[in-house]
Amino acid sequence: MTDQQTTPRPLRKIACIGEVMIEMVLQDDGGAALNVAGDTYNTAVYLAQRLQGTPAAVSYVTALGQDSFSLRAMTRMQAEGIDTACVERRADKSIGLYAIETDGAGERSFTYWRSDSAARTMFQAPCTVDLRVLADFDLIYLSGITLAILPPLMRTALLAALDACRRGGALVAYDSNHRPRLWESAAVARETNIAMWQRTDIALPSVDDESVIHDDDSEAAALARLAGYGLTRGALKRGPTGPAPLVGRYDGPPFPAVTQVVDTTAAGDSFNAGYLAAIVQGQSADRAMMAGHMLAAHVVQRRGAIVPLDGA
Image (cartoon, rainbow, N blue to C red; front, side, top):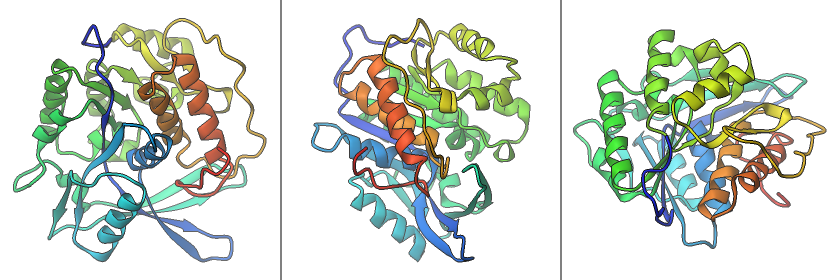
């Protein structure tokens, strides 16, 4: 969908909704490194870094336990400059965990332990952080994983809350980041994503996810279908090829190739952060696509979801 307001308000307060987890990265020597990560969380971290020194502020919206690893995640978020006022704490739940392995080409495989994750209970009573908090934000970002981990009734309630936020002048950004095992069925994933695209202002899909969810047989088919939802702002991520605009053409310089991919974890998440940071700062769509591509190119040449941005 296109923007609801004729004169967009400044995007000063940004909410990223989703699940933050403990990331266990398996090392070549058989050991493992523990980090804090998660798709929308990764975007929140890079977005906060890119917006440091600007009037914009990034908040993370989720639920955590009260275990030591949940505390580690809270501490890490705060250290990254992310506001944690919208993080629910559950005494009877814990944070999710995933292990990640990468092959010689940098492609990743995951093993998850998240069935009792506190994030699955966000916005649900009894709580101190409910859906009304979203009305305070100018830009709200979420992903397919955010929707997939929620119970069906809460998904519906979240979509209604996003409608209300958009009527109030907020923008909604969405990435259909797809994990088939999190959904009840392929049909539910497809229907929910269609409903989400119909209430999205800034669309950040990837061609791979869209082809799995909707059986698109080409990039052109994906772009045509997305256009059919009324989407005009955003970019279709195409991996090393670089992004494509949802409508029209890209008139900027060529997207530089990445010479050595070490780990593709957070490639899309970091692209989203670079893109959204540019939009928040009033840059053009072409500049936003380049900003997203360059940030993702930096991230995939290093191991792990969150990497230092020195020189990026």
